[in-house]
Image 1 (tube, rainbow, N blue to C red):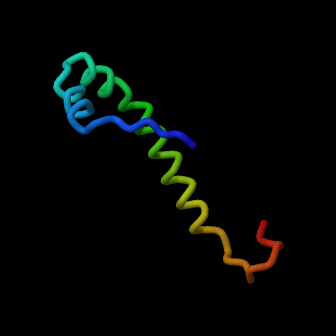
Image 2: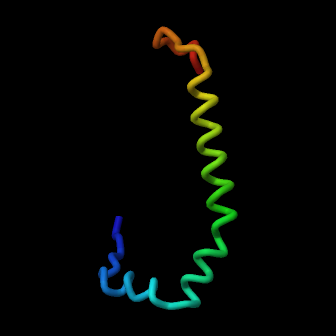
Length: 58
């Protein structure tokens, strides 16, 4: 896998751009939904009874 890296200076520069900040903040509702789904999934997993480690838990 070939990953492209972004220099820290370039990433920091984006956070000074008002248009970038506005676009990022506009995503807040979507991030809130994702966070709620993840948290709910974790809570459901915690409520499930623990299995003995066999395939029956699937």
